[in-house]
Image (cartoon, rainbow, N blue to C red; front, side, top):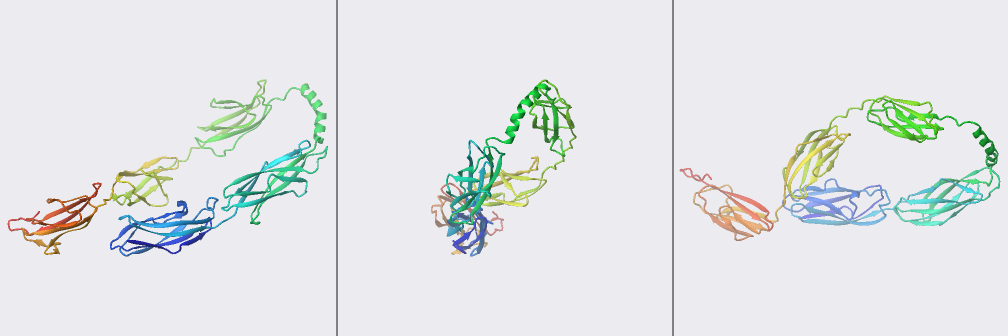
Length: 514
């Protein structure tokens, strides 16, 4: 029999913080047992159990500290979360449970974005449309009100909705129309910077701000007048002279140190490259028809020189710019090595936990097969539960940072499924008292006494099947020392075995030595 109690049945925690719940378990049975703690009603990612499975001796009490930490995110919604802490015996299946309530407190956080960051209002199209996006990063519902202004009061602002209601983790977009208050017919462009803010209606301290700009454009600008006067002169000048020959302005790479096998980026700018830029290497590689301002990724296999040419429509090439790459050999990566791998049990029952001891070097990842568990690099032991019966061949695979691997030898663990049958007692009796290690005379009659439960079949070696599947006795008269084996099977044929040895004194002729 087992009991469980909680230090508190009401807990409160703010997302991102942690609260500790103390759980006390007492084994009221007369024998030691193995137990398991589990929690229902809370997200398993909120909970940290130091040791889900543990052993308690007879009448032993143990306290466990359970850490509960909901993440500071919108998914950790404010409110009450009833949950159950349950302790179950891994030997008998008997359990006990206690209930509690976790109060997740609320927190408020919003984010504000605007697109585009810069807009333009024209003389014939005076309004510019912006999209304001608000995101609720807190865990409570919020009602938000929007505001917009600029230091010069040079614009008017109209929101599609002044207020929005937004749930935790939700985002909403509100349209905003911005219009400068004055539009001169002739004038230079004027830039207005403005701010948009969102503030909580119930919580005025909750707010977020974002900045944007709008450019006011007059119908005619001084630049337009000047360009109009110059267009004719520029057109005559273009016809009067030949086009300028193509020219490479720049050719570079962003990699200061290059290793063999690395991929680097070549970047360039060019003028007059009507048909693009041609890239060649001293190894015979050619990459034509690239944009005049662009980039290209190439893999370096050894020392190489790249040349860049600007090419025009007439087929003329510019003088090349070149880049010389002298790569270094990559650093050697040591092979991973499994130095130790052992398991504390070679035979176990379904539900048992095994402990794996391991030690590796030069590894960035350790995988346990066949479960595919990733073992911690900073520890030397790992526990895993056996969930099904059968023969399991465990092994370790260690990988280094370039995925080279080392695999351990296999360790076989045989997992059996516990029988529903049990042997309560099985002993030899003489004159109403247990025989134990006493020796009897040859031909002396003793009684084999048994008490069993959950059996669908039971038999004693040398005697045969038992008629009574709960309790009974049978007389035997061994001539020599004999081991009697009681085999009890449940409805699925899973056996439980008990043995009794009846010692018989040796006769002068040498008998009784079974």
